[in-house]
Image 1 (cartoon, rainbow over the protein chains, first blue to last red):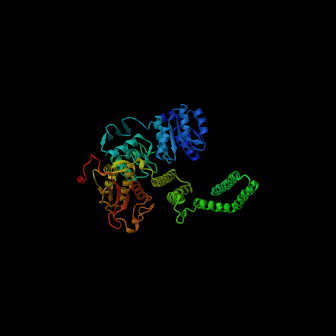
Image 2 (cartoon, chains in turn red, cyan):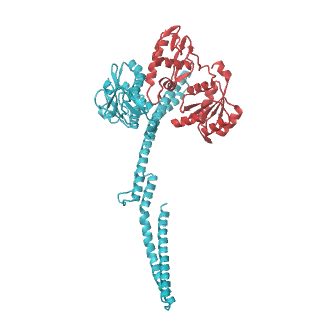
Length: 237
Length: 361
């Protein structure tokens, strides 16, 4: 992981009663350089909140001793301002709206890709080197100008379609991190790929991008992370 | 539960009877008193005896009248007991049972029984769909679960290199993705079953939906060497939810792309006639054989020769979306080459600003 992320070591409180989900989040987030505290009950969450003063809370809604949303409302009323990302298996639209109304900053439906949770945590904490507001992004000798929508590799302009550019810009935004197909579908095509078949469309765009960016180059930049998605990085690690 | 009502009715009737006997005694006494006033020399005691006899005779009749009251109470509450008993049996799991209304008199009880029957019909429909959902789900989830389980077991069966472990995990994630999609599609199907989406309907130009879908699939069609043509009426509008109509058309186009050979054509056209909008997707593939035409809108149907990896939920979803929008999705030409799917939706007519239908290409 990058040095500036380790330095940040922001505290994250995971409020979740499923032990396996908690364990995997704890391991994943720790490896990503965060200090992780966990709570399986809302009561424990109160204690952890007071002791650890987390920079961000990941909150499950269905907890044995109450509704996560009620807890969130109470915590917000008590003046806690840290970002809160809700995790839930309930994903109907009213639920979503209710969650955001009660003071959540973001909402992820189970099952979610860990990469996506990580991306959203970083976006909320703004510590991430991965997410950036820079107009021009660079990966190796690849340059992506998001303002002019132009791409260059080793100084030579690469001609992309609008959608190909959007895909590449999203990969560049999360450079070094795997970007899930779900996220690509949602951000670039604005559709839910679990309901509208899009995998073949995504594959075609990726193969075009490879053709235009990586073909006949020693250093490949676009990598497939099987079962997860795609990653834009100088080296495939 | 039904017994107190019968007892209560019986008690009311008894009360009525008691009131009747009491008022009879009172009237006799009054009559006797008036009589004595008119004829002061008659024997008063004798007169009272007459009253006692009269009332006593009535009292003798009380058990008989009480019996009649009991019978009446049964008759009044009987149909209600039948309703309750049937409802109990239905609740106990005999979902097909209904209250017998044919023999009932044409009164409020019959209306009640018919209302209860209609409610049970409604619940039975929801229940059937839920049962099918859970059955389908359990059945279909077994395969990817088995695949994941075997992958894990094989990976752990002996020591392997890091790359081999990585590959096993990646394949498992791929299977999980498939599983996730099936779950999401099944949930969507059950949600669309439940309806309740009407409140979110908005007027939509169908041409814009078609154009969005065409833009999404155009690069894939090109890569496959398939032409994606569209002819959308300028003004055709429907009331609906855009995201669902994109899902509908997306699934139809994806289906067409999977069955159209290189060099073929897929045509999306929108036409309007008689207040109805027809959204059609026609491919130049081999078509759908008669024996499968009936089943393609059933969940989890796989047409032989199609690519693997689809769960067979795309067309059922599309059909369900059409139904939610008050329309229907049909295969127009079973058994013929070049499958043509037609989705008919109630039209809203062209909006004021759009061009007349004569301009249609």
